[in-house]
Image 1 (spheres, rainbow, N blue to C red):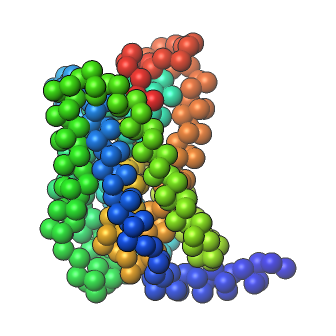
Image 2 (cartoon, rainbow, N blue to C red; image 1 turned 45 degrees about the horizontal axis):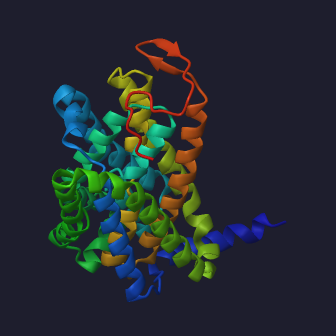
Length: 333
């Protein structure tokens, strides 16, 4: 008896989501940007030059991972938006998330899943460095291939150069500052990194949840419209990561790392970019925020499941006990 009333309601919500405007205060938006900057600063504090050794030792794996991250995953996301015939703002939100780099959460989940933490950190570092230029260009390119998304972007006259400037400030500047501190004061960086990253991640989640709570009526109205695309995209992203690891013939720990690197996005950055450039397209912000929450849930579930499973190394199944990472003694948690 509920279904006949539910279907028209969802159809109406889908029709209106492109006109959705989220009323978020300037203070909340500024606070989100500051938290993201601190988060990237904390990531850099825990980054060492040695963490990029896989770029030299296994350049092929890094290149394949980056290509899969910025080309394969967004390309499949584009096809998903067309197959589900989502509205333009939903498509932009999904593609924005797909074009964002990995975040430190992928390192934490890799560690929990007994994956290759060194590879995870290397991929995260490379993807964040490239994101300053690649994320805006990739978003403009892939969104331009979706007619509904392209029409909305044309209406708001989004400039890729403006996005590049925003990403440079949000990623490049704090990341460079953190690397400088880690190089000049490694002891301070090590002590501070243990608190900066978890604290800022918690603050970011509080901001996202608080923002959604303040718009609870919107949440109830539109959740049914975006839940299927978000879950489907997350499954695809994790699948691309796992398939990439297997295609590169990585051992079990490496495949787990690649899965989280490509499947877990920096949705905090996506939310900030959505707030900064798509304020009048609330559907973009809505998708990015909910993607972030689901990202944590699905990532933790997979990491916990993998943690209880034996790890394959070069074809051999190895039972691991204890709480340390599979290939790196330095925990990122």
